[in-house]
Amino acid sequence: MDLLLDRAAIRAVTENRMGARQDVEEARSLRPESVAVQKQYAEILRIEQFFTPAIDMLRSIKKDEGGPDVDTTLGLTLRQRNQPGDPEEALRHFVEIARYPNALPPGFREAAIHWAIDAYVALRSNKAEELIDAIPAEHVSSSLRHYFWARLSLLQGDKDKAIRHGVLALNEITETSRLDEMRFVAALLSDIGKFQEAHTLWKRVAETSKWESDAKQLLQCTARLGLDQEALEICQRLRASGEADDRIVEFEVSLIEKYNTDRPSRSCSRGWKTIPATRSPNCICRTSAFALTAPTWYTLHRMRFQQSARSPPRLA
Image: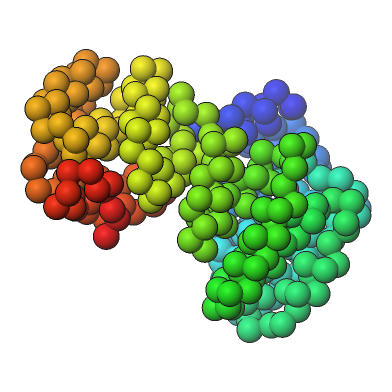
């Protein structure tokens, strides 16, 4: 049964929903009373957007047998169904996870706090402040507590307060801080316009041999700060490691074109060699402007070159 559930979880992650459902159905036929089977079956129902039967199944699990993962799945499913009363019930589950007295896997509690803050703001409640203060100190660092205060302030439209807490969150980062903690604070600093400070953290977090969210965030900061040489080196490392996203080549060409208009065509040629034959880079090279396709996680507006050849590209 455990092997069936493990395979179902893998298939669900790889979007093989039919295979995942078949595995869970088989496990359910073997152990219909198993809490693990019920939780996995409810998750499959949630993924397939059968929210009401998933909620009913999760509610049937006894509190002392469920654990925080049941609260999480139930809260998310209620949030997705969004019928009258669902947001309030989902919030109660998220608050329970945020205040959970025992240790939880990294990121588990933090996600629940995010959802709870969002729910409090949507419900126009002033209890989000109480929640942040009530989180057990042994489970949330001072840096993360300031981070959540800053996130709440942004949602409430108080950017000055968000900046104050963002700076305090940065000051609490140490050499032993977890990567996910630095990632949260770096993303916050970017959102409040503190790109120099965010750049410092993204350099500690990002692995520039992989075209993933951290590397994209770092590249965005370098563009904002006009660090063209560093941005070019990041693009080159990404291509050298085998990454073949068109946007890497486009961004690299935009930087080269600004300083030497004779080199873009050669850079495109190098880039094409690293891209599979089924894909072609959308290189749009002009002497006056360069259109950059936006990565999925952020939007880069059209980059305009300044009159001076030495001016860094700016984001509109």
